[in-house]
Amino acid sequence: MDPSSGSANVDIKKKQQQEAPTPQNTPIFTTPINNSARPSVPTVDEGIEGTIKTPGTSLLANNPKLLSMLQGRLGGLVGAPSGYVDTLPAQVRRRVKGLKGLQHKHAVMEAEFQSEILALEKKYLALYTPLYLKRAEYISGKAEPTDAEVAEGVSDGEDEDSKEEDDEDEEDKDAQPVEGIPEFWLTALKSHPQFVDIITEKDEEALKHLVDVRLSYFEKPGFRLDFEFSPNEFFTNTLLTKTYYYQDEPGYGGEFLYDHAEGTKIEWKDGKDLSVTVETKKQRHRGTNKTRIVKKTVPAETFFSFFTPPVPPEDQDDEEIDEDEDLDEKLEHDYALGEELKDSIVPRAVDWFTGKALQFHGGDDQYDDDFEYDDEEDEEDDDEDDDEDEDEDGVPAKDEKAPECKQQ
Image 1: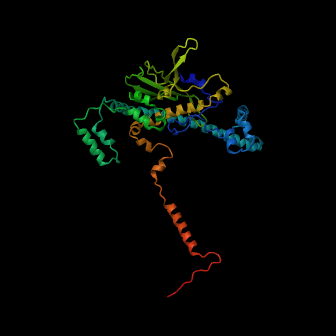
Image 2 (image 1 turned 90 degrees about the vertical axis):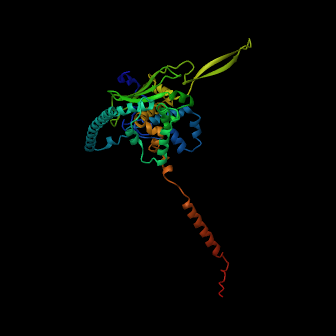
Image 3 (image 1 turned 180 degrees about the vertical axis):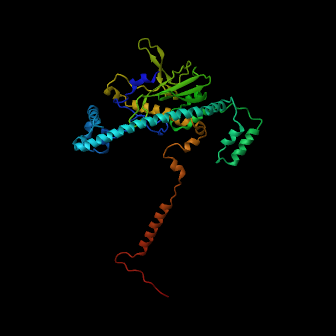
């Protein structure tokens, strides 16, 4: 599909233009679709829950239509001009317009900057590609790494015991031959915090046949992810793709704006569709008292839903779009998965396979591993409390005489 033809899908919620991050530096665990330039204003819910504590709140809680109306009116105030600039003297307003002219020139430079960044990404992807091809051969078992490559792959932090174990494994002639690196991509994906939650046990059997994940760019802003599979019992496709399109016009800061995504239709084999679950139910006829079995298919959670991305609704007004409260979250989550594959998993697949990438992945838990907490301060406080108790024991109470000191 031509990226330009997807412009109808630009509006996601309340016709807001949504902003993607720069391709070279995607934040981790963020929702990059929303425009960062938009002021952050608490919603009516936040105001009610956080500040208003009166009996009248029950009226809003029991009247969702009234609450929705208030949200809509207050939401319309976001980003509205305050009229302050219009009250300034004419000479000051002229200078403000001059600043706007400078800002316009800055925006043009920002767009050029993002275009050059994208050109650099494309250039270096071409340089990385030979390495990715070799990686695919080593994973599939079509080729073996050279001794020099193995030597470079030995990290400085690897201890001698593990090296000796590796040498013993290589010298073990009785070991059964293993082709390539089994379950490489399954292990790499499951090591990633965002993918481990969407991979089910049934998905694992299918993902064991995933032999390569590749990245490619378009002439226009956008990228495609190719998932290559070996023949398997689940689907006939050998290649599943996921394509992300950006809008033609840059965003406020020159960033590329997410437009929509498309995925390959999976040709499931009979009885192997992981995206649905078949539920059986017995029904009894009231007249004849005969029973029959009714089968019903319901959607199931699966990693392969990644290839059926959510689609923003078309030709709907704002009220109908607001009814699907989860749509924005689904779109943002889908886009975040694609960016993680592009910027982290594909370039550093072996680090995700070994778990090394987790040491450098964002998150607050890293501080828990780097620092050890002790109870020294608590012990000091306890000692101080004990000292105070001892002092109190040695001080005579009111109207009580101090003990006499008897010298020998």
